[in-house]
Amino acid sequence: MTILTYDCTAFDGQKPGTSGLRKKTRVFMKPGYLECFVQSIFNAIGGVAGKTLVVGGDGRFFNAEAIQTILRMAAANGAECMIVGQDGLMSTPAASHLIRKRGADGGLILSASHNPGGIDADFGLKFNTANGGPAPESVTDAIFEATKTIDHYKTLDTADIDLTGIAETALGDTRIEIEDPVVDYAMLMEELFDFDALRALFESGFTMRFDAMHAVTGPYAKALFEDLLGAPDGTVMNAVPSMDFGKGHPDPNPIWAKPLVDLVMSPDGPDFAAASDGDGDRNMILGKGIYVTPSDSLAVLAANAHLAPAYERGIAGIARSMPTSAACDRVADAYGIECFETPTGWKYFGNLLDAGRVTLCGEESAGTGSDHVREKDGLWAVLLWLNILAVRRMSVKDVLLDHWQTYGRNYYSRHDYEALDTGTAQELIADLTDRLDSLAGQSFGACTVTKADIFSYFDPVDGAQSHNQGLRIFFEGGSRAVLRLSGTGTDGATLRVYLERYEGPAGDLTLTPQIALHEIATATAEITGLAVRTGRTAPDVIT
Ligand code: G16
Image (tube, rainbow, N blue to C red; front, side):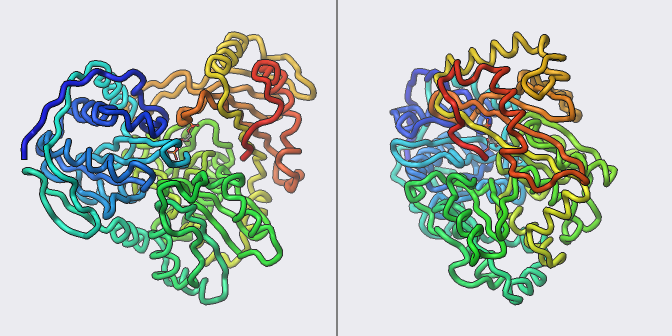
């Protein structure tokens, strides 16, 4: 096998976003594009000679070809061992676990998460560090710098490796270990949760549907719910991963998982339902007749985590991304534990988890997780909910009502304006930024602004600073609007408007969220001039 060195010209725009590099699939397929980015990762981390890396992806279009390219390049760059998921598949949380369990130096995860897959859809690649978590900003900045100056990459002159069986093989001097992507992860879940109690729950006639959305969690969910916990066949829907996710968006929210939502809202619906995304790190939780917002889910999990074996001694603290509602802050207050507010992006939780300052983390974007790995983890969230239901023997709706009656309710919704002209969206944010200082004291409809600012984060563990992490407008009575541009989209710009209003335990706890938030939404639209600037009168997606 010959090591080949190819000259290349740096590509513009290989800047990792909120979660790795995400582009249209055809962009990633351009000759040399993937190679330049992979070599830039290797260069930025001091090379991979003698190192062990985990590689896997969500199975989307181009996953299979990209894995072969990465394996050849890793071998040409002198990697000692590459641990690969069978068929090139591995969920993001399972990859995080394997990096930690095997003491690997990091991992490459091929996914554009909840974005659709296909030759005309999206592809992505992210690098995780040795703690199993997404590379922190210092590393992604170094990768971006490396992409600007790269002028050659190395690969091997060799045929594709067969990844269909569990095997150990070699590529040049590099050991290639092909692993079952499910086994280690399932074992970890058995350590964290009371599987006997869960089996008893299903034996009692409890019904559940899990929508794998034709994505990577299908085999994991089948193994966990149907094989290990005894839920009936058919509990897991859309369980076979496909390259284009059945032509849908593998995004577990009420828009893209509408059939599942319709099912739980019907009279014959199951007691509990959940869905996960392309790479298995996001989750949506539903109960008969009710949708649980991700922010509420985090708060309920934090308040009840002690009911599962892994957390029976209590949790050290909670972290949430800034746009996530403050519902979990009230739980932290009640338990006397720390609560941290970080920028959007799971990478910001890593230091807090590593330092033992927090046990649970969560985001409004359907991500929840704990210190068991360093990624958000969709199936973990589902199992923790099941463990709580198995102990409390209440419906999801009653658990939620009980929670609101104890802590009050943070009405919450995110409005997304997608595929906006990038310049228009940036101008809207820039103009609002210029006016932020003048907003306090002004009234817009029924809402009076008390404060407006730009969120900055100072990492309490390593002192790193992150600025410009979203605009916040606070209103009298504790309500809030947050605006920021998404860092994961691939079509123009996506403006996210996050709306929140708190109602105390004695208040009206059963309003429809969009009605409860109407005045804040109207005030925010007036403040931003959103309709005039963008020509949009309604959001594309409401979650
Ligand atoms: C990624 C990040 C999350 C973030 C989400 C949305 O999730 O890991 O931390 O909340 O994107 O980010 P944005 O609002 O910038 O689009 P995933 O599941 O897409 O990898």
